Length: 148
Image 1 (cartoon, one colour):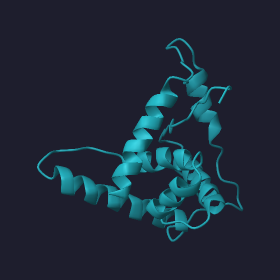
Image 2 (tube, one colour):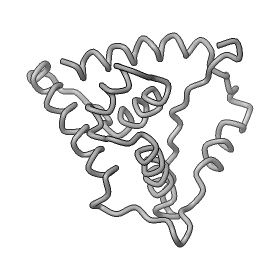
Image 3 (tube, rainbow, N blue to C red):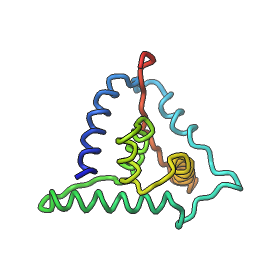
């Protein structure tokens, strides 16, 4: 139930924030350049392993979402990307505090937000740069207005 409340709250926040989004035109390559240049490859001393906390967090979160959707929509065909939801929620988590932040920490199975953010960054950079023959663009973003 808490996951459902956070999901609904996140959709509301996303809707509100979308009014503050920068618009990229189809003739403008700035979005493409932004996504391709935002995630630098991991350096030789950086690594993400299958037994890291972030991988465990992603897996548990993904299973929770899939279980919840199955429970509520088991007679329907539904396609989702738990990892995309995870990345989007992790951005929203960083804009939260107090009770909401504590709920996100429970949903993500984490204790330390700073460690989570560092490992999340490593994961994204690793996925985007995993194979030079595969192009993966992750383009979740939150764009706020300067007045807020």
